[in-house]
Every structure is written in structure tokens, then in C-alpha cells.
Image (cartoon, rainbow, N blue to C red):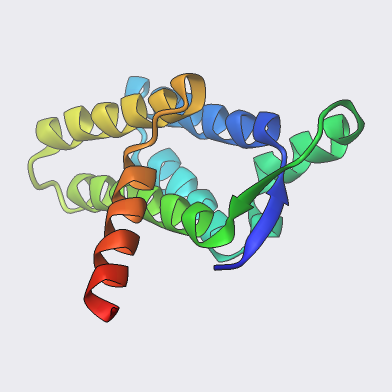
Length: 140
């Protein structure tokens, strides 16, 4: 798979930004802010250049840290999975289906975002590795 150089600090900042925005959305019960975070996250899945918080942090702190090599497919999968989870929460809120469940669901997604940010444990990355190994086994 294709590899790219990323700044870990900028990636953590990006995830923290999405986590804080989602927490604010939950606290003020704003489905539109949930949609905005989902759109920003999905944009980051298409290209790292479209990940606005990452690019902002990287442009400021580029000289202070060294980039690390990461698989581009993994980054795209994580961003897309997070965006889809957020969009599902927004859809539940928008269509007034299971509204209380939707806010709890979004808090759980927010906890997973913060877990990926501060601890470095990302559920979507584990899913990506599992699917990659499973598909590689089936192809050989």
C-alpha cells in the first residue's frame, strides 16, 4: 500500500479538535454541528490535504517535529469510518428516530475519538488491520 509522511502531533490535534467539537455539539444538542464535524472528517478521508485541523497544526509546528511513515489507506479508512459513524448519529437526530439513543451513541463515538487521540488506541485502525489481513489470506 501507499505510504505517506505524517506528523503524529498534528494527527492527534486533528482528532482532539473533532472530539472537542463533537462534545460541544452533544452538550448544546446541536445536530448541525454534528453534521459539520462529520463533513470535516469525511473530507479528511479523501485527502490529508483536506483535513483542515491537521493542515493548520502541521503548518504551524512543522519544524518542531519529525514526520513518521504511515499507510495512507489506514488513515483514509479511519477518517471515513469516523465520518460515517458521525453521519449515522446525525441522521438519527435529523429524522427524530431514537433521539436519546443518538446522543448516547454520539458520546460513545466521541469517547472513541478521544481514545484514539490521547491513548493512541484506535478501533478503526484495528478493523482496518483485521480486514487487510483477512483479505490477504483469502487472496493467497
